[in-house]
Amino acid sequence: MKLLITGACGHIGSFIIDQVNKIKKIKEVLLIDNFNSHRYSTLFNLNKNRKFSFYNLDLSRFSLKKFKKVDYVIHCASMTNAQGSFSVKNEMFRNNISCMKNVLNYCIKNKSKLIHISSTSVYGKQVKIVNEDDQSLLKPQSPYAEIKLLEEKMLNKNKKKINFMTFRFGTIAGVSKGMRFHTAINKFCFNAALNEKIHIYKTAYKQYRPYLSLKDAFKVFKFCIDKNIFNNQVYNALSGNFTVKEIIQMIKKYKKKTSIKFVKTEIMNQLSYHVDNKKLNNLGLRLSSPIEKDIKDTIRLLSGLKY
Image (cartoon, rainbow, N blue to C red; front, side, top):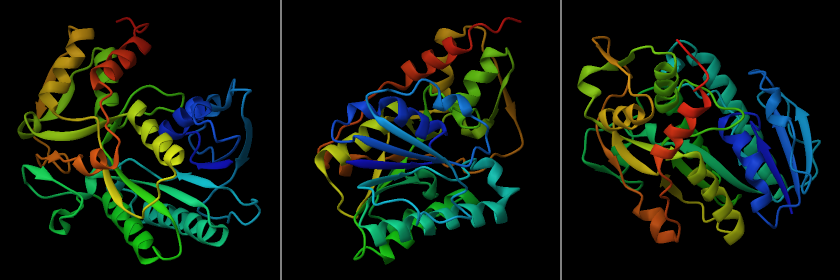
């Protein structure tokens, strides 16, 4: 069977590339990326047990019509910096919605099954537990989150024409060839490695947010394809809910001199909530990869930096 990965050179996409040999039914993999981030190293030393093809393509401007039918599509292509999305709102809307329309039209035409990545940042209400079925909890706090919710609505509108799964991912943690350092844990680890103070909004220090290990993210993809489960539903996907304080404590285990600085400038979406993953558990998939191991791996990756 054939798999197409959009945004293949990104943080998540590059990890899928390195692990895809574990999905036995996938024999051929098509990789699409526009190389805006110049992460060429994600294509080095690909597993020779799978047939890979790479296409340097801006999915927001060019269609997928030249590609022969594929069985599965994992859509990772998008501008992803939620905090930075305010300054590039119009461009992010243009890029991400155009990419989504392109993928959606392709999957409908070719009857390809789609794994769509959304985000737990679509939630924006101060409650103890948030789940997928309570629509009142959907209050995006950034342009990035607004776009993710629009993408979900696009899929729901076309649910009679396509087989898909939408996963609201927690904040990603873990090492990959295409990793970036704008998300919370990765950024904190990078600051700690440089002996820089980690800036934290004071009231956010003890607030809970969901996090997802890259290892668990891949388990999600593998599970869907192995079990051929595409039921047009939305699922939360997270490895655990943690406070910023708990994350900092994990970092200090491997970088003891880590220090923090409380800042007065409010960072977007500092609501505290636990994201519920019972719906995914009931489907038969439990995610439990330790976030602390991702932190350890990231710190070790940067351990050569001496100051």
